[in-house]
Image (cartoon, rainbow, N blue to C red):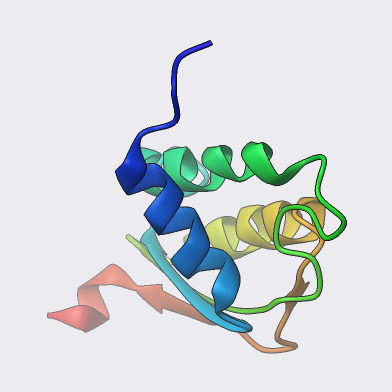
Length: 101
């Protein structure tokens, strides 16, 4: 197994040190963009720890998409947050892309 890159270790430390997160992403194929997914995938390195992944963190969600499809992204993000053992805020912000202009 290759050594985990130092930049990834630093990113994970910062990511896990925050008690509250705000995740922003455009809708991309029904979910988040690949760079964000890759970032979250690295959390697997914490799987054997006492508090793995994002245990008990709080996450606010913002997603934008063309038309009214941004809620599709919010729903996908909620599932990911739950799988990472974190909590979502009760309200999220789905945005119609055209309204950003």
